[in-house]
Length: 91
Image (cartoon, rainbow, N blue to C red; front, side, top):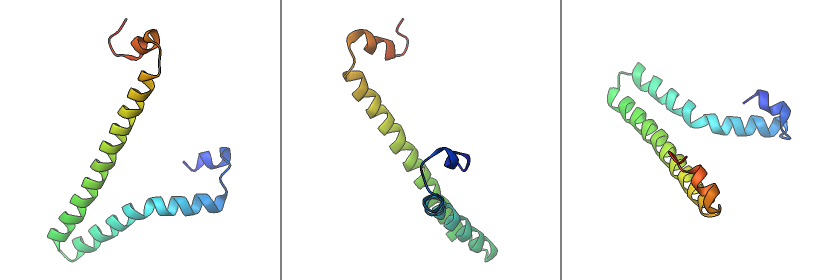
């Protein structure tokens, strides 16, 4: 992602702010898990890990459903020959 900054119109300030905000949830989860592990509070550590796993799973499901919706929307706008070409196992 850092290499793409030179190819985009984004300023360095925008990049630093957006990257910092995007990394913050994972950093917070890592800090909490490490703090709970050092205090041997395994229940809290497990809860933070579970919350992080649920968040990642939710993002995955959201993106998968969004991609399916986009695919269906674009398939409805195609003519029949183009539509058949986008369907799997259609020759």
